Amino acid sequence: MSSYAPTHPAGARTVSRPATLSRAGRIFLAVLLIVVFEGAIRKWATSAATLPLILLRDVLALYLVIHAWRGGHLRRYRKVTTVLLGWTLLVVGWGLLQMVGGESSPAIFLIGLRFWLLYTWFAVAAAATMTEADYRASVRMAVLIMIVLAPLAVLQHYSPTGATINRQLDGDEDSVFVAIAGVVRTTGTFSFTSGYSTYLILVAPLVFALLAARKRTISQRLFALTGFSAYVVGSVVSGSRAAVISAGVMLAAYLIARLVFSRARDKPAALGAALVAAALVAGFLLFFADAIQVTQERFEQASSAENFWERLLATFVGEPYVLGQVTWLGQGIGAGSNLAASLYRGGANFGLAETETGRILMEGGLLGFAFLALKLAVLVCGLAYALRLSIVRNAAFPMVLWITMVVGIMTWSAIGQISANALLGLLLGYFLLLFRYPSSDFFPARSSSS
Image 1 (cartoon, one colour):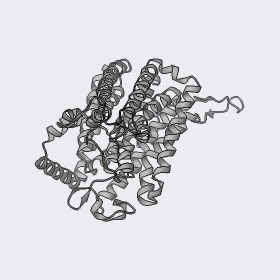
Image 2 (cartoon, helix red, strand yellow; image 1 turned 120 degrees about the horizontal axis):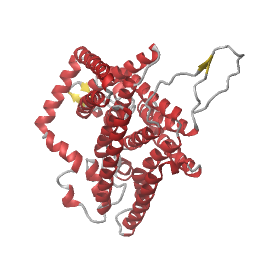
Image 3 (cartoon, rainbow, N blue to C red; image 1 turned 60 degrees about the vertical axis):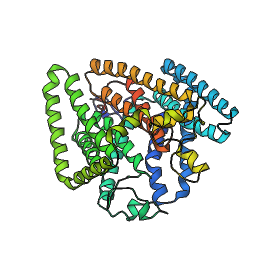
Image 4 (cartoon, rainbow, N blue to C red; image 1 turned 90 degrees about the horizontal axis):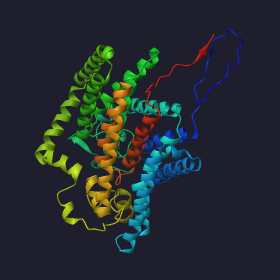
């Protein structure tokens, strides 16, 4: 963080200017903003912006990786970088073998490298190069975006399915996803429902982090409470089962973790904060009772069409048919992504499998099993570090963020869906930054002298 020498006469009270963002911090924020708002441009301005916007953020992500490597910043995560480098060589070698075996093509191979590697490297590079001021600004920006998205989601929820705000520029009413007849599944600024629900999960631990952080001014308290309120409202009107379930689980995890990990003398305050949060949630649920009714009907309709527990199991371990169709070489990394589907099959639907686990196994074959093992290893190591940090710092944030990592790594369509791929990279970046800057003081005091 930058510091500034006082330039006023002795005895005068001065307040330091906020630290400027580093290059890495500006790139991280740029990627975040593009991921969130590129869908809005494609939906309501021009669909021709799709490829330029994706290329722009991919170039920014790649530039940050090169910047971190050339500057020697990756040494801050030497063990992580070593493992990631070995994994990169394995993925590249396996992808070339798939091309030799006739299971892939150069274009699919490049798409696979993008989905399997780029934003993981971006996360490590960002965490290695960003300053503490960058970290604080990125957390506050993510919550500010949630404050912007919530009113939009409410407007979409109460608007007809054929309203401009609910459909693509070149789409019609029939193409709009609905929770129940006449009520849309909200998308916010994203072009598809999964992008919005994924962002809700990403921002949850950041909202809770600001809620628990020390606030020094009324505006900081208002910002934290507004962010929390926006998150609750945005989840309630989402029409997404994943978003609603995740919101409930994440809120419960946060309240329990805050009570468990707080110091003995701070437990009454933590209990009070938990009661206030619970009262706010209850108030919003009463105010948006009609949205709760829609969500309930959505669950009832879905349960009549599918078994919830079977769907949940498939999300984590893949569809039942996948194991019977997996080949040892796989069908080509990148082949199951929506980008590959749109380029080669004329549509935007996923190929190979619906779930993330299924696509990994179908695309990678034996490499897919190695990928799943690597994911589990990352989560186990992350648990050890997050638990220790929560105990040492008496903070709920590390464990809540780790729970979000479990959801993101195991269930998001990160190798299949473009927005989810980038959002997982951003989430991993936040998680790694936590261990460089564990104080979780997101509203630092401005230095002053008199």
